[in-house]
Length: 488
Image (tube, rainbow, N blue to C red; front, top):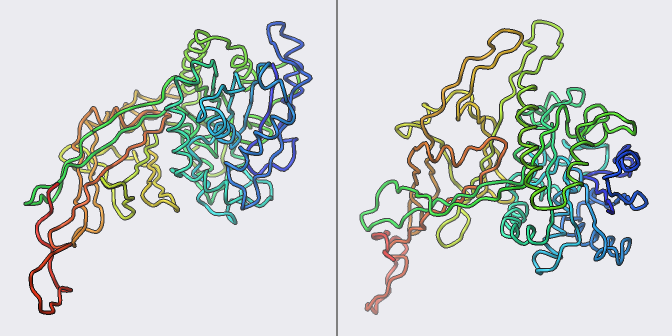
């Protein structure tokens, strides 16, 4: 098996891989069952910190590099690609662009992604100057805005790639291409930025949320019916379509953060005979050779995740002064809303309000809301980050023989109201309402996952937008008023 290593964004030296290449060689010598051609561990180099470079440009260059360096091995040898951070989306874009979209065989048997920003990162919106000061991710190089645009939460490019992978899932399974996500959910407080809370978020490795790394996601389409001629003030939204991408193994690794030599999922690997969570998970992935192995490894990771998350549920820090030294780490869920009208136009000005019983937002559990971010290039795309334990309920949390938090009762249900703009004129929109239900809560809020919710509003056009007249004398119609809504 040939192993290709692909680094993340803003990297400027191949030492980013740390001691992983040497460790793979060591493991190949130690484990007879490990089929790794240690002469062919390729270190990738690509330029991401120039503003004109986009993810698709890097994917194109990766295709050329693979053909130049591996040649005939692309069609004759098993190739495993191991990525870190933005390297995951880069390789997935390469696979989609040059093989899956063309119905060609993918020249990769294993794709193992370490802390991949598959649904982006909340840090990407902070701006180039602020990001350059964060030692969590950057090392003094110029962040490339072309790549940053892809990495921003709910970017059109990231969502397009994820939906393409949803469609390609049967093709990947038929070809025997095995994809894995390995990520951390721990914060290295030596790298924490006290001004920017994103570097210490719940259910995150300090850069990438678990829900952003996880490729399994859900998709709901909420559709608004056309108004009657006597238009209502608010129209119900109904779940018109449901789908999901399921089955890609996710491992949440014990004590791993995004970067850094102490806890980093990649840089903390040492070339020695010790147990390391990244190495053990990586080797388990590389030994998958069948659909049955793949399902078994997914199950093994799920059981491991339960243990890792339970053991790390309470974090205790040594802090000077009268500070709270304990922190309960809850699972979180990410919901991306995309608002369009039934003609396909983006609705860029709107407000969304999550609701509970009686369409009342005040009856939602306290502490459920974590973060909200609109995509700066596509304001019709809005991301909510929510505490799943607060919404779905949780058992009592104990530590050191004491109950730190009593049991949390689940929300009775979840709904939403959307107020789009404009609300009057010849062409406008009407508010929409998804009625509160337990089913909606369970469909939308999934721990460690993203749910993409497309809201399709009806574009209301009124009589008077176009008129024909028999009058021959001049008539000023600039003050004409809209008539009743047009029916289909």
